[in-house]
Amino acid sequence: MRNFEPKRPYQKVGLELRRMLVDKDYKVGDKLPAERDIAELLGVTRTVVREALIMLELENLIEVRKGSGVFIIDLPSSTSGSQSLKDDVGPFELLQARQLLESNIAEFAALQATPKDISNMREALDMEISELSQKEGKQYGDKEFHLCVARATQNSVLVDMLLESWERRENSPMWEQLHSRIRSTKYQELWLQDHSDILLALQKKDPVAAKRAMWQHLENVKFKLFELSDIDDPSFDGYLFKSNPVVLSENN
Amino acid sequence: MRNFEPKRPYQKVGLELRRMLVDKDYKVGDKLPAERDIAELLGVTRTVVREALIMLELENLIEVRKGSGVFIIDLPSSTSGSQSLKDDVGPFELLQARQLLESNIAEFAALQATPKDISNMREALDMEISELSQKEGKQYGDKEFHLCVARATQNSVLVDMLLESWERRENSPMWEQLHSRIRSTKYQELWLQDHSDILLALQKKDPVAAKRAMWQHLENVKFKLFELSDIDDPSFDGYLFKSNPVVLSENN
DNA sequence: GTCGCCAAACTGGTTGACCAATTTGACTTA
DNA sequence: TAAGTCAAATTGGTCAACCAGTTTGGCGAC
Image (cartoon, rainbow over all chains, first blue to last red; front, side, top):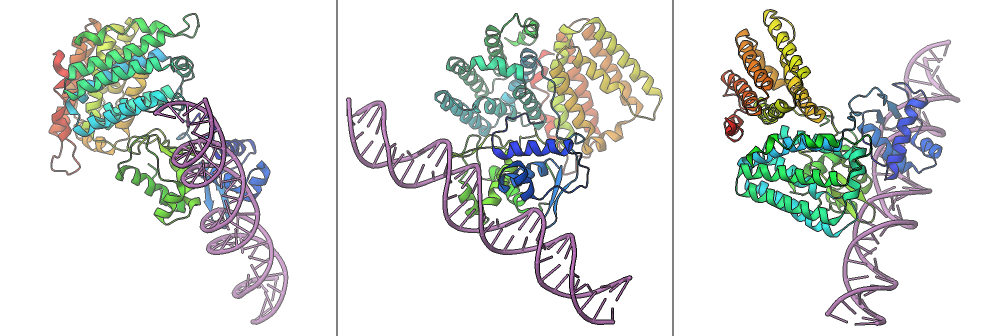
């Protein structure tokens, strides 16, 4: 499920413990070694083990009973709830879907947005601006802005659909590889302008302009990504690029 | 999300913190108070706060940076990534989202559909027809038809989005309650006609007609469901019904 | 021999002091 | 005035000792 790089120590230990559950042939109902013993076994302190156990507990793998011990209530492989990673999909296929969904979300949002929604978007934009200067660290403003637009439809299903597409993007090695070349501030500024246009249209409650602005924004993203692509790569899916701009741009 | 009884202390604190994120009007990017301050504020020890923060971190709500502080990267209301089962949502909110998504899928599909896609749709339609006679048993034709349309876009992300919305429908008690009154053959025939119209438009590769037909189909579903609704039920979400038909029907 | 009791051992939970990374701000210097 | 420096303050991370339930096992009463 989470493909994160284990950054904090408890995450590394948690992953190791999860692996241990299957490797060591544990069964449901078995008792794990005491926290102190696990700590000694893995050569870490007990605190870290406790935190890692919380991680497993939140995945419903174990149950912790004070005074008794830690018991297994489920096994990692069988728990389908946690492991739901979709297959990787080409960046352009993903962008195509987003273009279809988000441009219409923007159109709808133009009619539904409350003043509070608008101010939320403005805050997201401000976050993007402040992120322009700090070249290091993750960028949250972009995602937040798109989410704000979706939330402005007042429809939680649409928000979830957008979230799901974003999750795919964050879990996509292909996308990461492609987007790593685009960290340049220049593009971020371009997209900031796009976002600003979208916000303006939403503010004016102009659905046609909002739809077009969102469409154009994702069109620009596609184009920049396309420019940076290695077309000779056999796994490149840019052929999808040609097929889609026609149908939805008729409101232009 | 998890409806567990908070048993261990960190779970109580975690829930309290999550509630605090929305109540105190925190925004994405904001910094939470220091662990020590939260501990004093809630009258618990710092250890418990740290464990509760791990809980929020595993929900992708916060990011913990050593030496800097704890930062919000997402808000509780929207984070649906981790838990598998979504909250129930009103039938009309769901239909609204489907209307936005599927009408545009139909439009796009009109340009992308292959002959094989068209014949798949025809088979789904045949399945619906044969299901008309057998009043018992589950109906698969309806879902299959909508899926065929989505597949005709040749975009797997769009198919997955549709699948997700369908999954919500199948897991929704509210929808089940409402739809149970509609099993009558009469409505199934009406929708069969709708589907037939959609197929015709796709066959003619007429995106505008396809979009309108799909829109109208879901409009009809909404209307029938609305007719059968108990408007006096306080949990009824039909108010959403009024707000949406305007924006996307301009292609009519 | 069986049952009941209770203390010791074992388990997770808590605490406060300390460590390490980061930020802050006053001071120096050009 | 501006930029650089560095020490102190702030923040999350670690640790070992201690607290509080639970289990275990031996001892004695019957």
